[in-house]
Length: 374
Image (tube, rainbow, N blue to C red; front, top):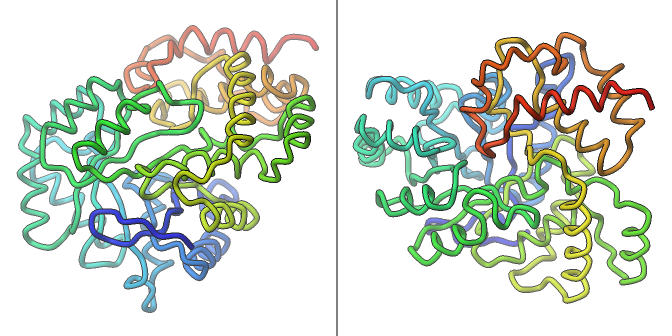
């Protein structure tokens, strides 16, 4: 495994994101998830990223259980303070102490303000949460403090300059160079001495899909052996600013694929031929993506039960890959209770969306397309 410096620590270039653990019957498949985490640790992955709300609050306890019996000292644990749970400063202590209990540890290596946007940043700053973070550092409950981010680049720069952060976590992949913090934010943070963790390197799994036949022919002609998922991950790892790149791996073959890339990809090692292929793929995706949704799930829960991320995933899948498969997935494999037709246009989802998607409008378009006759 390749290691990079992150807040003075040596962390694996590949981090294990615990937002998309394997699920069975609606709950985390504990055996499969722990086996994946243990195998990752055995292969040199030492950065585990979770959060208060992942898997409905079940991710942190699962990670805590996975690093029992001496493994805790072999890994760096990262989790996040959710602004939506914080109404008073007492809530900060309540949440952090509960997270320590869930994770079965006395301290957290990396602690982030979660999913900052301009409203949540203003609220946390005005409430005095930065003072709480200083106290948590001083009393040893956390060792390094940063923030994760979902807003525009101007807001990102304001937050970077607004406190003495050690690191930040941003969404970044070859489709999102101008989305949210983007390349401009990546370089801005690095220039100001922040270390950077990357999330969504595969853009919610989209960039791991099999290539269309003509692009697959280009891949073979160019002699690129990496799979689409590996190539997307390799593109991020090629950036020297990316200290740790998080991937949500819920299958052993995905884990092995990603480890192979992390072991092989030093910054600046992407070849001109690989860059040419990425450019071709990027151009095709830009032509066909209908909704810029990364399935971050911040729009959920919908008061009407609409499964917004799944609807948009299938809508994009219909455009980019296979219309019949997408319609089958919506009509036969998605509960009618979750269909976009139940949208009441309340607008709550649009207020929460870090991508600023016009969700109400796009849900109507998606439902019409996914229920149309073939």
